[in-house]
Image (cartoon, rainbow, N blue to C red; front, side):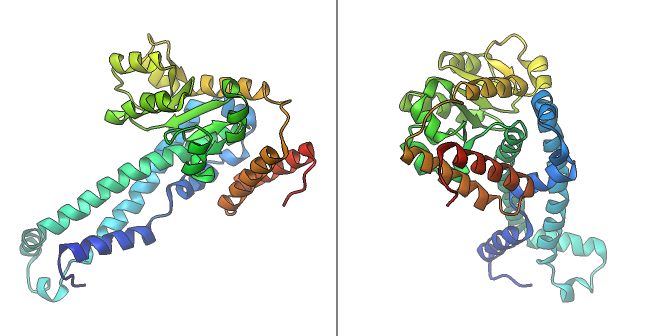
Amino acid sequence: MKFKDKKDYEDYIKKERQDHFITPFDLAYETFVQLKFDKKPVDFFRQNASSFIEQMRDACWKDFQEHEKEFTRRMLVSLIDKNKYESLDPIEAIEDFVTEYPDYLYSLCLSNTQSRRSRAGKEFEAILELLLVGCDILVDSQGVVGKKTFEEFGLGKLVDFVSPGAVHFTMNKRYTTLISAKTTLRERWQEVPEEVDRTGISQMYLATLDENITGETLDILYEKNITIATTCSNKDCKYQEHANVESFEKMVSEALENARKLDDVSFKDVQAQKIIDNFNNQLKRHANHEYLRNYYQNKLDNFSKQVGKSNK
């Protein structure tokens, strides 16, 4: 097909990308089911959190690569003028193609790179949520509750998960678990301690897969009561000497212990209704994700009985 200019081609790439790729969460969920993690018991996730994340990341990446290869092929083919290139031999056709479309090829490569970065973070968050649900750890995610609500609760924009939930955080900050997720820290890690200072959060986890965190960065995070959570292999190979680096297994264990201390908390009607609303939001979000839908429906039913409210 013909494009008026490079901008027209870039718009076409953007539109086709939205149609071609499933969302990072849907990809993570499909991988979760394909690997039969939906059949695993709670203890499996609690004891093998690091292995679960590594397996999910590897499988998601392989699946995504196949989709990206096909997408890239389609986008390149869309530039080909068949009438023009049929008369040329293969070498001449390739030389002419790369000579005529270098800016277009650059736009496609740039779009692929930016998409990978954006998806990597969202996919990591999806894998973490699946891990927490597998461990039977209740969480509110910013993606469901909303950034505005998180900020209203004093959680800040960089907190991705709060366990057992945002309402619990307003009632007892000490025994709630806050998690920010970043595949790699790069320069943006500085936003996390800044957010801790701004919101007055006492402590939180920074879940990451980064293998190159400097000692200086770790020291700054330690001073702000920010604990790195990563895989066992990454901790053992890269951060064995750092007290504020823990495994995902340790993070899960501490989140469970904190949640137990809030088992008997009493809720006002408005607080209970907010929790029920958040469960319903999860059910809407996961309408097509059977494992998660069943989990949140069960939690909603139990909570509604606990507080004497009907499921609305």
